[in-house]
Every structure is written in C-alpha cells, then in structure tokens.
Length: 289
Image 1 (cartoon, one colour):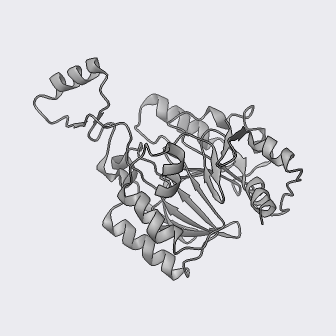
Image 2 (spheres, rainbow, N blue to C red; image 1 turned 180 degrees about the horizontal axis):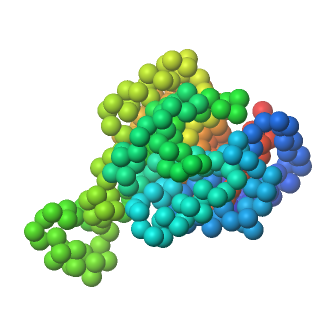
C-alpha cells in the first residue's frame, strides 16, 4: 500500500508523505468525515474495525467512497453475508461502478434521487453513484463517471447460449486463456453509453464546468500512459476524460481506481487498498500551492 510520486521515483506510504512534508492535517470540525479507497472485488476486510479504526468515530452521515469494482456480483450466500456485514457498519458507503460489476443486477435496482443526483440503493447504507451525475454533499460538488474496459479479455468473451460453450470454456480454461463469460463475469455495460455521456455533459454544463472532486474507475488516458509506460491503449472513456473533462472542467482533485496502484500526479489520485481521508488529500494539495 504505497504512493508512487511520478517524477521522483519515490514510493512512500501516505503517512510518510505527510510526515516528510512536516504538516499537520487539521480536521474540519463539524463536517462529515470522508474516506476514499479503491477496488474491493468483493473483499471488504479493509473495513474491519481493526484495519479501519477511524470508523469508531463515524456515523451514517460520514462516508467511505470506493472508486469502482465494489464487487456487486450475485446473490450467493457469501455475497449476502458480506453485504449484511457492510450494512452493520456505522458509516455510509458510496461507490462508482467499475468494469467488474453485475450490471444486470444494478440496472434492476430502482433509481433514487440523492444529494442532487441519481443512485441505486444496494443496501441501507450502500449507494451506487450513477454515471454522469453531480452530487452536492459535505459542502462539495462531486462528479461521477464509472465504468472502464476490462484488461483481462484478450482471448474473448464466451456466450453461455452458444451450443459449443462448454467445450470452449474447457479449452480456454486449460490454456489459461484470458476470457470472461457474457452476463456471468462480463457485461457490455462496463463502458458508458451514448446517453450517459450526454447526461454527464449536461450536468457538467449545468454546474458551469466546475466541481470540487471527480470520482471514476477509469483514469484519463494521459495518466494511464504514465502508469503503464505505454502498456495501456486509449479507449473511448479515457479519451473523453482527456478531451472533455481534463481540458474543460475545473476541479480540485480526481480519484480513480482500476489500475491497482496507489498513485498521485499533481491533483489526480490512483486508489487501491489504502484508505485515505479527504482531509489528508486537501492538506497535501494545499502544501503544493
């Protein structure tokens, strides 16, 4: 769980960054407590009280925000157990969708209005922040745009309705192929639709192309290039982030997941297993002004 500082070659934990810069993070008295983290993939042990003791002072008016791949997959006993476990937490969980979510299940949930935007309520205190929304909470404006292309489908998508599915699945598995199964482990809705881009554009324009924070799963392509050193190719969403958002929208900080790395470049933050507070982020940004 380290932070990569681009250009410096240093890998330091968040707390070491704060100590190195000899700053004290001042918590804003009276404001909701907000923490941010990255992909969970159905593993929520980072939210245990021993791993995340800060929750002892949190209420449902405080938030933990997950940058996609929350792990909303099925209604198996294991998944139901963990969702109930999360519902017993004192804080509210917010997540943008990643490329590894069950979009059939998400789309079956009724839409609600919450803090100025649309959400799906997965549990009493678990909200899916839908694409292209601008929310107003904790004194900030938050723009959300989930989704990303899967990196692990180079060998294809198998259709379970294909009469030859079982044979292909067996062969692909023996070969160690990188593939997924339609509507079981991969959904075409992993990438935004034309309507979702349009809704995002409308909401950004309605807010004067100015928000405080951006929450996504995919990163802008410029950032993905830095992370992968040319390994990752551009896609419609990462290019939209580069051309529509980075160039036209004013924001304090951008948080993304997907790449399984703790990372910062200027005011763009890659999130993975670390849980950091928004106060820490704002303190870090203020030190760079």
